[in-house]
Image (cartoon, rainbow, N blue to C red; front, side):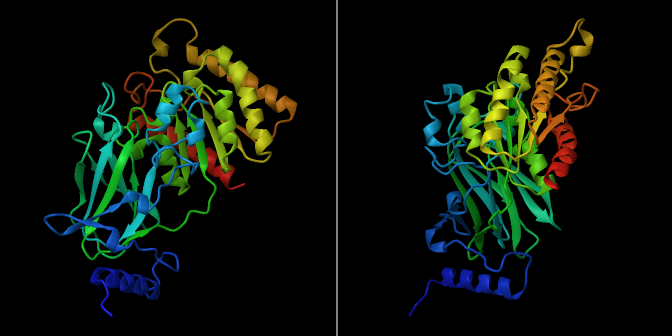
Length: 377
């Protein structure tokens, strides 16, 4: 019986990997090359990324494959929240390959590729990392040129052997189609199934990733890589307001910890009105799941203006709510002050509010030890 040569080669490679005792699971789930599309010029073959699966999603019942909220949320959450949930912030593809070359093709939901204060590489680009001795290290970024049919070379030569990769999707645009390109006769395989319960980040444009230069620099992604922990990004730009509908949706998830970072989109009155009911909804569904309340960032130009800044008033309100929740006996609550969340030199934002990569790095510095301590308990 004649067998497809490429399929046979994949099967042999998978067996050899197991026999060689590589630092992967006992079985490698290689994609079937019969479902790949060859390039007209030869060499690279293309696989639909959905064959590999996505990480960073909390639900599976989706209106479209690259959404962040379930289909039932449409018409329940406000329209801006629903629209933002179809942007791919925090979503990624994790895979393995022994290909000497890597490429990507992708099409976008929105025609606009960038924003006045944020580059297209972060808004609509891709961001590739690879494992190196257990840690994730940056490999390449992919710049969008148009809404549809973008194509980018991610690696012209890899170290050889089977590598594990993590490819982040756009922060402020959505994906309609994504393909991973590998060299013909190379193995493309799914990564090991994640068994850890994720960290769920719920917040504003800052959580969403504005204004990172590339998707992997948003602070939920940075923290996830540092801790080697799955993360779900539910940042909704301008719309992280702790609404009851979002509390109900988040309560459906089963995370290792909730991070609530919504104050930049709220005023003191909303903080006093909504934070405690939001926490109670989560606590009712998950009596033992830790909840981390995060203060508002220090607005970087506030030092120059007289009188209390709005961030100070919101943080004061959050401290009051936190104290009241503790007095009620609500357990498993943690609190992160915002006084050093971005540093104190005024160098970490684009506009006094939205972080640069430096700002996101500093946010990750503040969050990492707190979350590490929570997760290790």
